[in-house]
Length: 229
Ligand SMILES: O=C(CO)[C@@H](O)[C@H](O)COP(=O)(O)O
Ligand SMILES: [Fe+2]
Image (cartoon, rainbow, N blue to C red):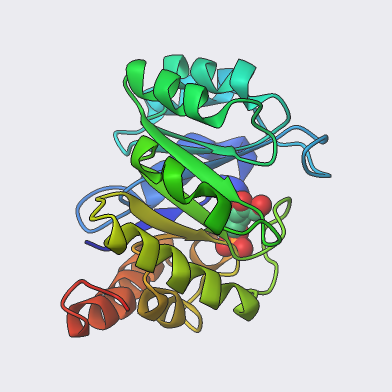
């Protein structure tokens, strides 16, 4: 199943409730992607727990929180309590990723782990059953509107092969530079959850942009019979 998760990093932060609603509803966003940055793990600062709490009340679309922060072991559980349905931590920042994934799940959210572009998937093969989603970054984290890194396609493909080899159901998310001109390559490589910030909120009609992205990805995944490799 293809999922399209618009990133509110490219939305108007003074009108977040409206911006969330613009991409919601039938055929709209599957999840709203919320980029949390702390100016330590990445050189940018965005929002924190109180904003997630308010967003939760402002939309029915579930929240996919991407934590680009130091010490996720301490903070991630608070995002579950704030109402996130999925919490992604970076493996490079986590002290105890397995314990953290278990804590996120125990608190009732989906547990997800992200890899920066230079972090390989292979050392984490044995952790995959502990996760509900694996995020392969397709830009260096920190900013929206960057160019898609084609060099990440082999990692997406290898990750898909590992997921299938173990017969796992976890989702494979890509984030960074995903647009109408790159989503098909990501889908062909095996991704099934697509984050798009500027390609959605930079469009005149964000809801139409979500539908167009979904159509492109579904065409590829459908041609593969839902199995991408
Ligand atoms: O996590 C990040 C950036 O670090 C992303 O979620 C961006 O928000 C994606 O923006 P686009 O590359 O789609 O404009
Ligand atoms: Fe993100």
